[in-house]
Image (cartoon, rainbow, N blue to C red; front, top):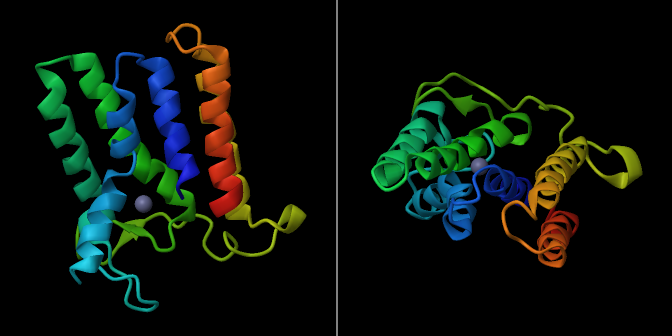
Length: 176
Ligand SMILES: [Zn+2]
């Protein structure tokens, strides 16, 4: 999932306009960036039958990542700190339905929760798209919709807000 995470960042921006867009954009993907580094380093693996991404994607790990981000920002601006913490936490919430495996409670827990669409997230669905694709489309619609609705309040001109939304939607259509 890429566009769905970006849409979450847009939704948070709409609610807390002071939160820096660049930081939100990076932080909604923080577990993904960790996963990239750890999988390249061989610590995490997505080999079928040997799936392990507990350091980047377990509940405990993502909560620690979110708390650290919040702590770094807390003294500067508490409201922005909460927004950035939410950006990191949104990752795990959005991954719950479509993540290829259940998200572990903590690294190497051996149990967890998630993969809610297991069995049919990648099966054929309406208009030749998978149910997982439609779930993400709904997330993109909600996040982008909120961003467009709040554009004026957060000082973004409507054409710019529309352009960002089209970009995120295009990402989903092209890569979703
Ligand atoms: Zn993820």
